[in-house]
Length: 579
Image (tube, rainbow, N blue to C red; front, side):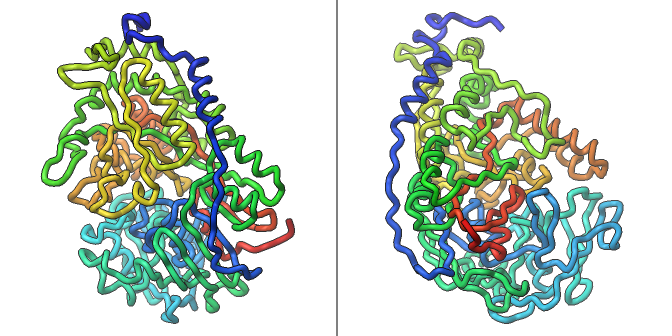
């Protein structure tokens, strides 16, 4: 492609990699280490103190959009099985893992039978039975319930075989059968507690805030966005566990202060999601009171591009899929934006070991990773693309086309690291005549499930937004359904759809559907590679870095982490050991 010289293309010097490096250095140098002022609920030696700088706002796992809410729910609710660090299923409420050999898994992928562990009770003393699993299926699959987990339950049929056994039948051969009732999507609800709150009344359930589960801890107090206090459930179904008498999850603050509260002051034992600049982590870690734990998986920090018009409201809704975006519907504009992001520099000078630059959406496990990994930073080529697309430089240095300014609203959550990335990208975009307005939203608001909140990521009332998409399963089926047309978030589904970009592509839908039914593992893996490439080639999202789960923990705390499940998936096993 022929590129125009800077003076003709933008009227200003294009941002070179050296200039970008200087910008990143200046932004990073401004980092401060604010203090964290805590109000500890207990100082008892057998009390576990967790700090989530993004506070938990609800405790119904089927409404939990944000990872921090999923984690809070995991104190109280459990699935039939979870995923360990090797991507293997581990029984939790199941008596055993279904296999072809034990006769519980159909060889043709059309059904699976689960046996419930006997003797499990809910926190109110009632027994866990197959009726609760059957109810959870009915609850989650009901469109009026508006559960974020509906995609895992909508197309299956659950049959109660006996008091402790269910069978799941799939409408087509299903290679990824360990979805419903498994991992973060599989929390089982008590029928006797939620039966009166299915469908349109689902948001009225008192248990949305005061859970009754089977987990190792029982709720004592919950202040949304601020504090969870929980106590050991003495009748927990695993003898000798959990190891702590009580647990608190404190919410609030910011990432840097959360890390300090664990690594420097020792006020807390564990802080979740502490991905800040690596040089700050190393500086605090050097104090010796704690350590940083990185758990590699498939989580991706990305920029989503809105394919719909977020600027025009129709019947109380913006970002409607049927109304194309006035700027980003132009594929050349989207490609230009990708060329303006210097991923290796962002990794080296902002993320360090906490973010690995990538050009792909799907980055793990290895068999699903596309070989098409080109990361190209070329502002001159980006400027030329905008010229070709008819975006002409105006007198004020901002491009225009048919009376529309090339101006983009770029939003993300309030987090120091993200604000630094925002600033670097804004400067790069400005260098070719793209105006960028930055917006930072409190995480509790951004990831809220409140339908009246205009600033949620699912409503996407911006042109671009940046956050981490999580991959809680060692299979990409769930991750990749967020580009399926039937998953588009909208007012009709209370913005619970997982397709937040509103991108719709018939070829993607066809290939995704085929992949979900392909029994041959090698053929299926290749389909997911092709799906990744469709997303990347169409520049629906702009990948930035693969983000290992980063946590700060006390030196004497022993935990069990897995990239394929919630951080608290084995909270019953956590204990204090030797430093």
